Image 1 (cartoon, rainbow, N blue to C red):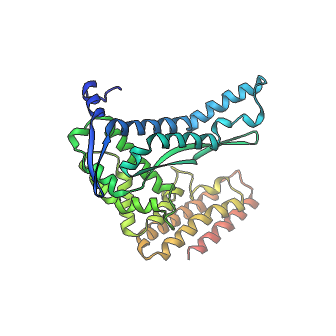
Image 2: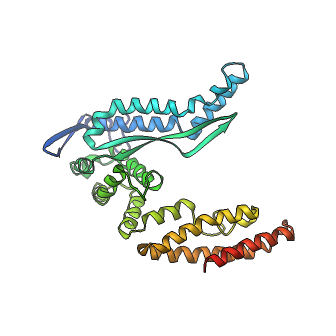
Image 3: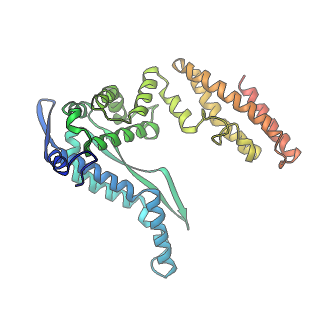
Length: 322
């Protein structure tokens, strides 16, 4: 295994061959650092195998085979089929189950969160292996057994960094925040302590987790995630958002696009703990609406009849703001 920058190959091998011992319930648990790194290596390989670029390459080769008379049409996207992903995920879980149980972690293969390929009646969803916190106390005990100096400039530190990104992504689009699963509750119950341990270990990349922790404490995390996922607070002109939808829209499309931000605004208004976010979103959407109304009048490629239809839609949205 190659050493990380600043770390000799011998030092890296020593770390991988070392064992971390930590208390869990009424016993001492010992886990090999090499096995922990192997877990993350296999997750990275899985995510690369079922990423969008890999799916496109697989589709290209399948189409070439089809063009040469090899294979059936139904097999064109078979390499990206969900069943194939699940079988591979089951193998990874089986191999690494002992380490996962020791660390209090759990694997979860997800599909379609990062897009999908469509063609010839077939669908291949982009797959991704994610990690859940199954036992927050065990995972925290593992982190507490590590020292900043021991993991500095090592593969383990990079792997723990990647885990923070995965946990943040689970909060963003993996969990039902209205009716949290056991895995979500385990993460939220230990999130502050995990962030504190990451900071103690000098592991960067916890900004998203810290932001979600802040909104979780405030009581408006669900609304905040919805706002973020829709890009509703993006600066006008730098994102195709509410200030721009009238540029390429039918009246039905424009009305439908505004339904979601208005629904989120209503949700925030009705949450006593989300009033700061509500006022921020209200002001931003109001500004976007004014920009949209002014911009509509400058769109020379639209007929006066279409402008009148869109103008009526925007006026109705303005009335909905109250």
